[in-house]
Length: 156
Length: 172
Image 1 (cartoon, rainbow over the protein chains, first blue to last red):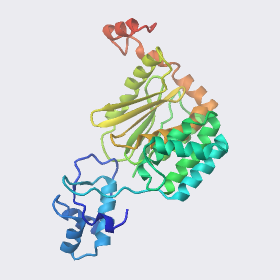
Image 2 (cartoon, rainbow over the protein chains, first blue to last red):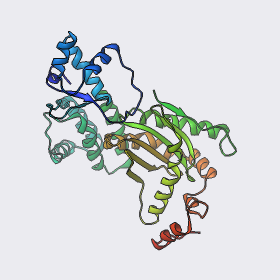
Image 3 (tube, one colour):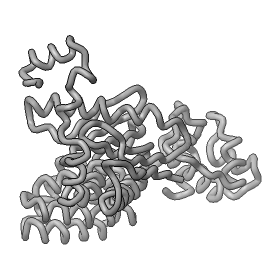
Image 4 (cartoon, each protein chain N blue to C red):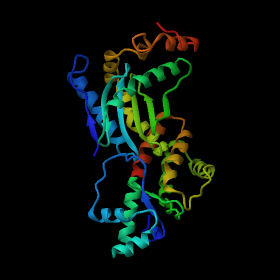
């Protein structure tokens, strides 16, 4: 998530239960203390006298950890997307499992999700891979495909 | 930081069998701990006893120790009607997933907004070594023979057993 893109986003403390322990850096703590549901990331950066990318990075980390949530009325943070290289890898692995129709199957499943390769959201990749897995009849090949894709998703 | 609670040695689990169990559970839990939103997991035997647990944060683990039995009962009751292998349900403010691992049951709990496809894929990949380990499956069966045991009168009252029988389950 680019730091510039969070500029107008307003965060507030999340009411959600955390899934694990979180360690805060002093910088993250300063940012967290300013997230009151009214000030944007850019405004917080100005208030702290800190560069906006630094504040955006800290806010992004806190948001991903579930400590912060987007305040009502704020612009939504942009969704992270997947690069075309990743789809080449998906097509290549799928071809190992189902043969030359893999590229067509991939396009069909992307379309079935109502998405396109360009701007495909990162948080829907697992959903896509799961759908592709259902097209592999052989259980061992399906498991191998999921293993490779799981590793690839973790590297994104 | 995630905590993995391993099985202690007892009459059913000792020696090589215990090492194998703890090794397979550890590998499975390490994979699950990488899924954002997962709060914990437990591997249970056919009687719902916890054989290993993953806890990704601080907190009371006792409520989770009792989930195995309830989910074993649900799974075996449903399997009397159809080939159910996995349950996904919302319990209070958590998502709970139970996966049949042959003679073991894996229970995972986490935030309701956990990426379910990612969790399912991780389960497929991470649970397959435990499911396919014939030696360990023999050990699990030896320790707790059948899930039907959890529908016995020592676990369910007469009305619950009556309902199951009405639903077509043959109880001993």
